[in-house]
Image (cartoon, rainbow, N blue to C red; front, side, top):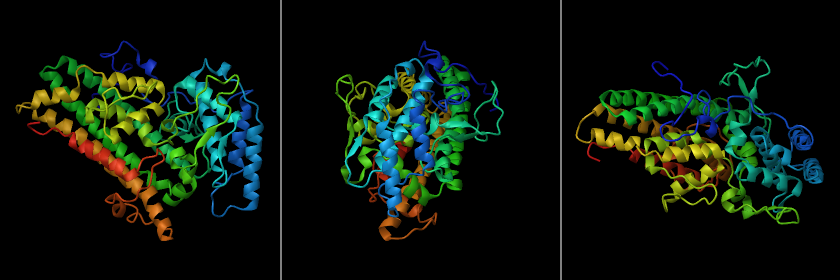
Length: 469
């Protein structure tokens, strides 16, 4: 990007912490700079082995309409093996964040395989071989004991076999693939790759936010001019994120996603019949310190768990975005509307260092939005207000397109099921549904997808600064 050089430190003005304490890289952003661990060694290889078997056996969803007796037996045989794994200690994992991340990914994947191969109506009892180490690992990472965006995307990639990996190798959109999927389909892999590409491209925006913050502290005429230039770059990057998002259509089939992929990743609140999950072994001797997860800790993974757009929202001052305490989950700015409360809750599903970054960002004593309003309210610096509003507009446009993706991949297929047909007509899954709030279809994170996303989009649009705000 012309005129903008990467920096190795973000938010140096509002925190004494180095960026590494937030687990953010100046080149890859919230994505790790190095390839995540792809396999645990002994004794935890038992988890890896049973996960390999689940994937290679092509286990079927327990509510599949074409489920055969052979499929049912294969599912149960695998679950029996999962139950028979001893409860493995995690004490030797605790000193390594990458090992803990891999353990969380593997155990969460095993849990979702176990739950979703059960027959409809069967009680959901997660065996102690999975539940206890998953709860232990989750406590250490301060994450919910369920599949999260970080498991699907941030820590679920590896370099292609053709890549010669060296100390200077960096992940890019052209050299990475996904490590773990439920279905081994191109559609599922692409569903995880697209947000990974967005994370990598969005890393540049984090650097620009740091540069803007430097200028906010200076706040002279030259600084104001530079802020305008930087905001143009932010808008451009967000526009590029929108383009990347829409490449979802290239390799992810809506019908495959809705019927084959999405059911594997849903949370407790999206289960048919309202079935609740029981984590076996909680409170038993030796495990009295473990608590059963609350309902708010059992939402499925969603794009709302990505720290990238949260960071841009917070920095631009959209909705005075709230953050929540990871310990209590209580909003730091009081009671908010349902949409903002949900977004705040989603931050608890982010890696804890990324949550800390968002809190530091939200505690900035010199908000950009305040500066823009004060420096332009009397008609001065019209370019500053215009470029700020352009960045807001780019975010609104991104959310418009996200609505189209949700309409195409969730609302459209849901309507076609109701109508008793399967169609992949893009227009049917796009404009027809995007203006209708009556679908009631939930996202994997547990929200009414269209109502929630439209609310976020509309609040973004309202963040535009009028001349006399």
